[in-house]
Length: 222
Length: 284
Image (cartoon, rainbow over all chains, first blue to last red; front, side, top):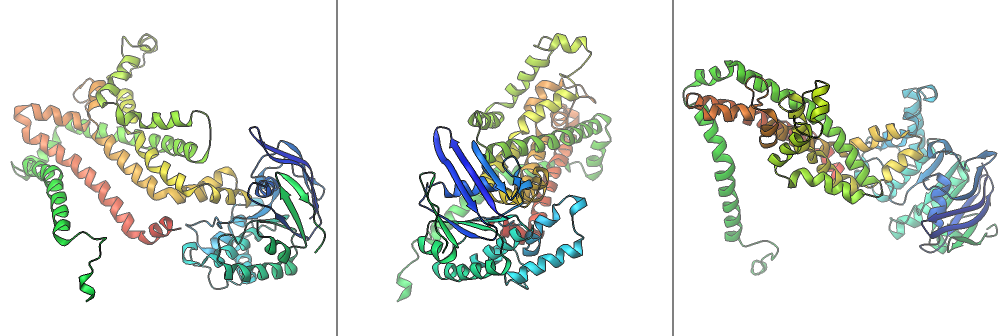
């Protein structure tokens, strides 16, 4: 699903967090939003997800105008820096959460939900850990569960907020390579936020640099 | 050689024993001893006399009233407490610190003052007094008044237990739930509540204990009408002041203490059963 953002603006009181953002992302692209703290990259990501409201402009997912859609209606897969896994649920319940909270009409049967959950755990190479709880997992494993959970809803776009920021250097390198491979395999349109320049260039098809709430450089294809 | 270096983070043994000893002595004298005496006095005229105390119709009415009051006040305050904690912990809004201060108000105000507040508002000569008698609604010296007084004094327990808990947990899990398509209500039931359930339980138990045991505020509002508006604590006072019913007073007091013990035991049992979950919820 391609994404187009036009004239996006957001203010916090009289502080401008985002100004006049214009961005086009082709379907299946993996792009990095690169910038220092305060550049607006996380705000932009959250605005695309609907977790932040916007004051000006529009967001389109393909033909769909997502600007007025609620978070739930946008169907975006969001991965947080600190995983945000549901502490009181085991891994399988975490991953299948998005399927289990659907309205009765669109909800798959329990056996089907379980199957899809296990399929996703296979995909992220965490087979066999269904019954574990998040506190029993390592940071890298938790992030992979978070990713599987986001993928379960078949999102229009995958959004990752500094996904490896909380992990140590070795795990970060491993997961970077793994994420790239995964993206090549399943091809969701993906945007990830990072302040690490080498990570951005290593992973992304295209690097979009932000500063001061604006896009400084729309980036050429890698 | 290694023995020469004492772990400087731990007090030397004599100090430790002194601290533990003082604490136990304090707890023993001020908590345990009075409770033991209550039960001893209750049974001082024998087991039959103990049970006889509960055949009195006024006493039975008092027990019923206490249970009814708790059954109304505790669920209401649980809902209010969760709502208030939710608002304070998850949102920024004007008047947030005022709300926080208001929640603590019942703790800083004497229960008697709280009772008088309601009399001033709803009593015969109160602000709403004329309107209430015109519509034939009784609040003071009746059940509604007792429930109101109980609601006021027990309000902070659930909220105060939940606010730091919810603040520490933040909103990321809720945000994640929303992105996954959960409606606000489902998010609340499947993510928020499970994360706070132990704090919630503890708050409810404290609220319940206080609701059953409240004296001051209820005393001002109830009118002490025997068989009608006396709760257990008020009935205990009544019996205690009656020279012929001295040990009956202790019998009823023992029952009240027992109800407190039961709730405490329940809490400990649930914690024991679900110890693993508890640990997981506390860990990060």
